[in-house]
Image 1: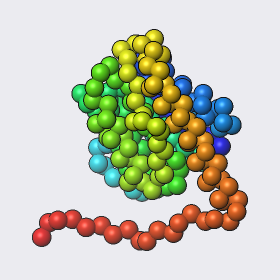
Image 2: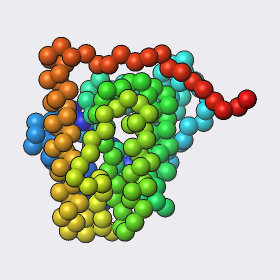
Image 3: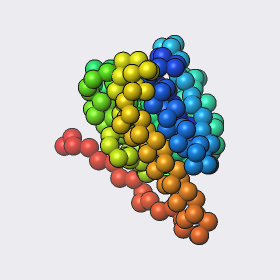
Image 4: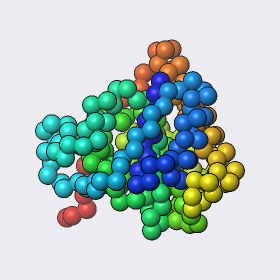
Amino acid sequence: MKVLLINGSPRQKGCTFTALSEVAGSLQKNGIETEIMYLGTEPVAGCTACLACRKSGMCIIDDKVNEIHERIDEFDGFVFGSPVYYASANGSLCGFLDRLFYSNGKLFRNKVGAAVVSCRRAGSTAALDRLNKYFTISNMPVVSSQYWNMVHGNTPDEVKEDLEGLQVMRTLGTNMAWLLKSIEAGRAAGLAAPELEDKIFTNFVR
């Protein structure tokens, strides 16, 4: 089993990476392989609503969005990490995830998801809520911890002093490993994934 952790911060080894590394270490301790993907500092385009992905299943903007699509079967779970910008996840990560899920969100069905955020002081719960919505619209089991998945600090060294936050990250990794193993045990026992109804779309224009 393998989990992809996406570092949405422009700082490759910053506070968000410190939090994700704590989650990854806990996953590895519990026998789960991990990979941390860094989005980088180049501008990340948002969705242009061109709908080309409806035909190809791939985003017309050829970047790491399509790399994940091509590798989706490698991963059983995902952790999205972001710094807090104005009480939200940062724009690059949101644009990236908008395209990732809109272009082929069905690929994430039944894969396990979690989000973590890093902030200096506040805005973390709103940012966390923003990221969790990708999971809850995509039939993904969402992993929780003993507190909201956040760390506090203005530098990686300060984050390392947030002992409670780091423990929350480790607990998150332990809970994710347990859920992944539970799902695998269920499949081995012949428990099939739930069958979904045909999707109904409505709007409120009369």
